[in-house]
Structure formats: C-alpha cells, structure tokens
Length: 372
Image (cartoon, rainbow, N blue to C red):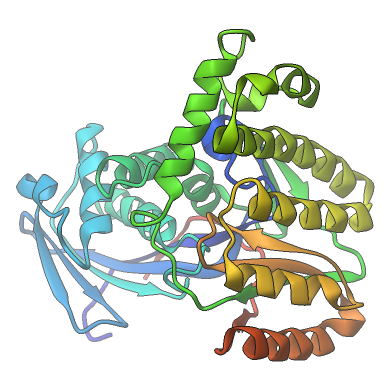
C-alpha cells in the first residue's frame, strides 16, 4: 500500500453452528465470527466523495455522498454504497474518504462476505469521522442496507455475528429481541472443519426470498389459532396440533422452522454440558431437515454432508448459511482430521466432478479498529 491510510477496520465472516433459516422467523441461532474477514484501510480525503478500491480487483469506484441512493446497479461498490447510505440516513456523519477493501471471506461461500463488507464499511466510516459506535447498531444498519439496498430480505444473524463476535465463543442470539448470550466454544477432542462446495450462491437470485414468503404465509395462518407474533414462538406440540391447517410446501417450511428452533435449544444445552456427541447428532438432523423440508441444500452440499457423516472420525455435519451452495461445517475428532479432509475431498470430487475447498479458520472477534 502506497497511500497513507489512518485506520485499519475489520469485520468478520461467520459460520452458524445450528439454527438455519429461522433468524427471520424470530428464532434463536448459534453463529460464530471467523478469522476470515473483510479489512478496510481508510483515510479522510477532504472531499465529498468516497473512493473505493480493492486488493483483489483492478476497479476503482467513486461514490458521491449526496447521491448514495443511485449506486444500486454497481457490480462492485453497491454494498458499500448501501451501508454508507443507511448510516447517513440514521443521522450519522459521513465524510469523504479513501477506502481500500481486502476480503478473505470467499464470495458466494455462505460465510457472509456481504455482511463483513457492510459492517466493516460502516465501522470504518464512523471511525474516520471521529465517531464512536455501538456494534449492535452497526449490525442493524448493515442489515437494513442488505434488505433495502441490495434486495435480500435477510434476518439479523449475519450482520450481528460479523459485528459482535467474540474470540473462541459462539453466540446464542435471539433474533426477535436481538439479545445475545455468549457460550464458550469448548469442543473437547473435536475440531470444526469448514468445507466449501465451490458452487457459488447468489441470494438475490436464489429461492431465499421465496422461502421467507412461505414462512410468512404459515405464520399468518397459524396466527388465526395461536397467540404468536413469529413462527419461532410455535412449539413442537402446538405444531403437531395445528400444523394440519397448513399444506404442501408451506407445511414443510414451517415444520423445519419449529423443529430447528427446538434443535437450537438442545444444542445450547449440549454445549453447556459438554455433550459434543449430542451436538453432532443435532447437526445431522438439521441438515436432513434443510434437505427434505426446506429444500435449500442441493447436490453439492448433500454430497459433502453425506461424505462427512460417513467418515468414522465425524460425529456431525451440515450445511451452514442460506444454502443453494456454500459451505458445510463438520465436527471431527482431532486424531482423524487429516484423513477426514483427504477422504471427503476425494469422495466429493468423484461424485460432483470438481474439487471442494477446505478452510483453516478460527473463531475470532467481530469488529476490530486499529490506528495505523
């Protein structure tokens, strides 16, 4: 870097241990921030323009601070423009600056590169303007940018994990209240292995918004017989009694949400008691539900999960993230990790025809700010 940047600001990618496609239904989820992150190098430039550049792209983009709403069609820079606009519209000061983005969260991996970009952009803009910020507020504005600017009707989990993650901890995040408890990630003799199926996903073009609409339809029907404000409040017993009011795919989507919420509660108890075998069993159950009821896995993720679950060192594996491509997470005995990686990679290549990618990532902090 030749330019004299004044701050280095990072925000994390994330995995979700369990609790998939229930954040926008008001459920509790269990994400963790990763050492894979988006880093922003930033300095003021004395103009009314945000100049963007990337370490991995030849592009340079300039954003007029007075016209931030006009950049939705950009191939690169739209996430930054949306994040800046939401921060500005909330009454915060946005000043002209030069920003260099360096992202180690793989795009389209299901590890929330978009959230890392949005969160780090807002935190960097606040920092260079001399303002303090609340990471939860940053997460909420980043979520607003994703929903209102880029058109993905996402829940709060990704941005919250990116902003508020803590090293060596998972978050038990209640998405209806945005209240969070931190649980130590103590896996004993097991390691967490993250594998990318290398089929990129695009949530805007995927069935993500369709799934949201189906859960909203289920909620509107169940509200006629239950005093609930979100699907996550529907218990397994209530669903067994009133679920027959739903039909077809709407029934399936709701059944997944209700049972996945229950799995999160069991997983939190398992982590607190150190029952890692139960946690692994719950991961397997979650993947099965995401495959058969929510239908967001696909051949690639199913091949990875099946190969992982069949390996003797693995006690549980499932897709993580929104699906339609992206990553699996697997709990693997430390003594068998090397063989697990080798066998699963070979089986995936044989089944799908191209290679997967395994990441060495640790559970890390969310936003970090360093004066250069």
